[in-house]
Length: 323
Image 1 (tube, rainbow, N blue to C red):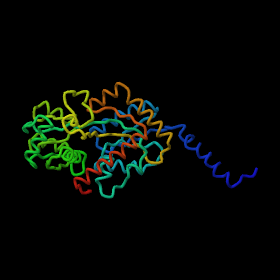
Image 2: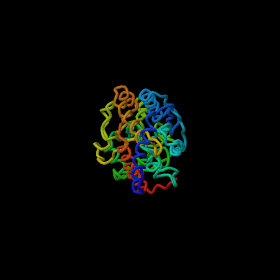
Image 3: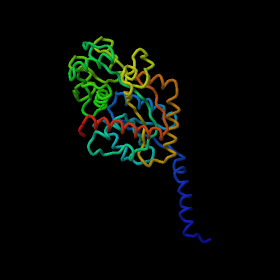
């Protein structure tokens, strides 16, 4: 039978449509490496280990956490961006994925071009914490003091271009106040300085904050998320405290290298969404001060684009120089 030249592209298209699913039918057939862009023991690492255990049970293969900390998550992120797109190397990363893309000069990866989003894992707001000696007990009182004494209040962060820095700049703009940035090498160090009374305010994770709240050395004024945390219903959101457009969550998510077969990405996403809905995962993530994610690849992709646009606007407005 003679095949016309016009038929070849059609036949080739039909053939290729069956290649990816056939190649992925036996997935996974070996252990999966789950790269974490941070050192062991932090919030993202703890989330990754919970997810790795559940994922292993779901797919019937070992899922091994591989911590590649350093450079604000960039080292681990670069590794996965360059990994084979076969579903056997995944990335767990926080909002630094989007922030580094707009604060790092000539970044070595593109969050949109170089990755296939699988699902969000956890959404964790921060506390706005102040030293107990600062004479304010609410966001409204903090704003009033800042307006009465422009430049008097300072806030510590985990360094120029970090999420806690950008949060402070975003808060300044949203509240219409002038507070001074004091960068440290890490948010933990900034928080230690807050406890010691060397800075007035820090945007901090719930886990790092609560032990110091109990000592009476730190006051929590508000939570940065869109709603109050179920574990701390008495703490209001920033939005309901007089700054309606200020909503910030640290979002950890699961990604694969770009060009990973779509059916593999969809399978991992479906399994992730399923186990994130279980009561034990809800409890475990709540203990970290967050709520379970669980999104389709399309939804996570849209969130990445949205967050990059938001933080790029903050960087430009605050005149933050790329590092």
